[in-house]
Image (cartoon, rainbow, N blue to C red; front, side):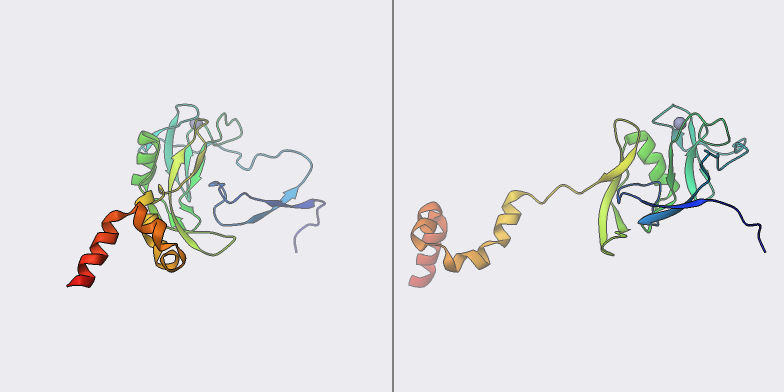
Length: 181
Ligand SMILES: [Zn+2]
């Protein structure tokens, strides 16, 4: 049996785009009323390969357990808060992608994210904001021409034939020639 202790349980909602907390829409926290550091000892990164430069403090970023973390973001005297999960919304983030993110500011387009809220998968880039915070960046929308081409099937029937043929003489002449043959 554990010792009883007094604490308030806080339920805090985590924004969907918070890459720090990839696996929960909510997190349960014990609030002891004092700020307690979760780590009492700094991680020793000696001999480990740095993945890149921290966008917040220019320290080195390392792989550590289930996260990628800035060397200055461990232990009780941390001076930086840069970190990101190895799995973000069910999308695995490889060390190569973190290297790319730190070097170029953006990962490749990653296809296996899954929204906690809707359960739907989505594609996105992880990208560094100006403040060094990691956020999602979405694929550029399809060019207008492509979007427009999809709509007509429905619209064609209802649209006025007069304005349509006036606006698009090419289609009109095509229709004519094909009907004459
Ligand atoms: Zn840092």
